[in-house]
Length: 287
Image 1 (cartoon, rainbow, N blue to C red):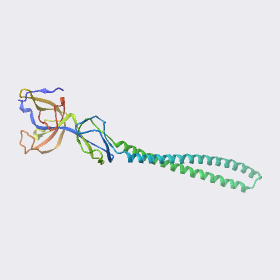
Image 2: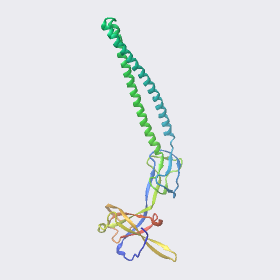
Image 3: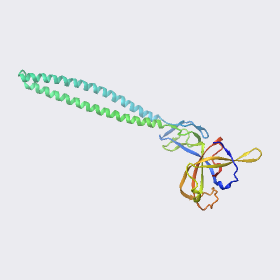
């Protein structure tokens, strides 16, 4: 929507004064460590998902290397154990065939039963060894699963060392410098969105029923033009939030009613057409 030049003599639509503010975002890291790279300074533009800082990754990389070595060792052990189990299973099959052959000879009376009993014991022992090694193999596989879970956690932490901006905007404040430690959750940058600005204004209880979410109000600002004349502009703004609680009106807010009365805060967002809106800019709100 284009900027509207409008006469302001119809003062019954006047609501009150306000100040323009930017929507701000705190860009923080969720991985604690030393800041090894900062790519933005105050006043510079930042794009959505742009890399703005890097936290030291060396401790995490060393842990990942340690886990990779442990996985390689376990993999070698598992391979050896599988070969051992395969050999033992072959032995069990051989003992089983011999046991069946000897059993037939014992039934025919060609061999003593003691030889059959010995093979039976050997067969049972071989099966128990196979079962024990299979149990060991399952334990080794469980260790691999545990290490893989630890590795996934470390990879997630490693990705958090690369701090990206969640939105596009302008760096308002840089809280940390290169080489400083960034605690988890503490902001590194404060980012402001200048494409859409916000303003909070106050209305008294009798006026509150005149406003609703999604409603359009007008933001009036003055602009000096050559020749010493002032030009008045109205920009449309959309109400996005209405407070549920009343409060005493701030001293810097002018309303027609007494300042001592309780008021309700209302927030409206306005597209920053031609970058006319600035942080801290005094404006007036009109219906």
